[in-house]
Image: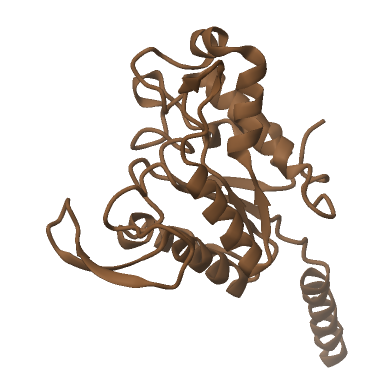
Length: 256
């Protein structure tokens, strides 16, 4: 009888060990952080018929191999995404091998974000709360997201802000060019990949022309947020940028 129980115990140990040794690898997560051009509406439901590209990008991935989590929030800047605790809903859950796409800029033109990519800081009065806050440069904010992602074993990728539907001399007016350069500089300083999404989309708009872009992708009342078709185009442009990255890290996760 003792031999029977001994054999049973050994069998149980072997079976348990097999589960431990051959536990399927957890699929990576693609995290998206940013503003309403990534996720529009309180619940990302396209309030007012306006959508962010993050609401559709998962359709371009094989979600049996990678999870897509859109944690962007409308109205946030590179500063307030952290101070309003939205980053706290992402950073603790980043695991080794995850990707984090970082896109800010549209809401950073206020006193709570200093211009540039420097290490300077200042105490300012937040115009919304009327409270004094310590603030840093746009590039410094981006570099903190990069550093904290890397500290968790994640792979940060910086994207420049999407262009607005604003035109000059028949071409998209590249408003926000400073933020593009600060994004690029912050990414280079931290040794991570940068995708100039602003250029990819603006170049696409230029080929279509002003009238077509307005008719297909925007409403006449809003030159920043796209309708569904525009969000899907922008999502495709994000993927276009991802395909250019060194070593093509998304090849095995993308459809087609």
